[in-house]
Structure formats: C-alpha cells, structure tokens
Image 1 (cartoon, helix red, strand yellow):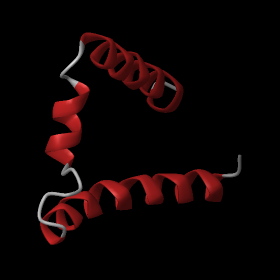
Image 2 (cartoon, one colour; image 1 turned 90 degrees about the horizontal axis):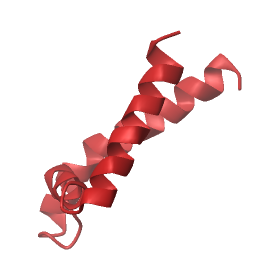
Image 3 (tube, helix red, strand yellow; image 1 turned 180 degrees about the vertical axis):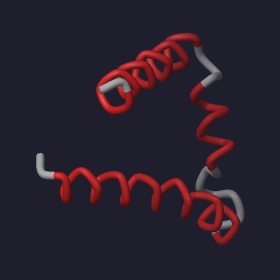
Image 4 (cartoon, helix red, strand yellow; image 1 turned 45 degrees about the vertical axis):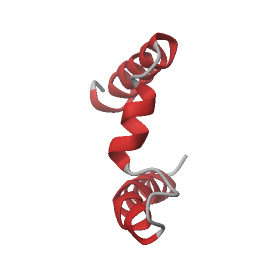
Length: 65
C-alpha cells in the first residue's frame, strides 16, 4: 500500500468513529454510540479477547516499527 492509501484508510476510520456519536443522537438511539459499541465488545469474553488480540496486532504492525 502506498502512504496515501494508508492515510486515507486511517482518515475513514477516524471519521467513522467521530460520526458515531452524532449519528446516535440524530437517530435517537437506533444506531449504537461509540460507548455502546465498546460495551458490546466487552460483553462477551471471546469478543473481548478478539478485540485485545486485534489491538496487539495493530500496535505491533503499525506502532512498533
């Protein structure tokens, strides 16, 4: 991937996270807020472990190099 493509992917991911809260407020709770998404992630142990492993993989491949 080129640097521009990587930055575009990061921009889309950050925009999705930032837009999560206003979208939740505008739809009066029909869509999950960021807190709701994280709450669902930690609700079950397999999802929590998968999130932790994904976070470790992301940190190793993007921030440790």
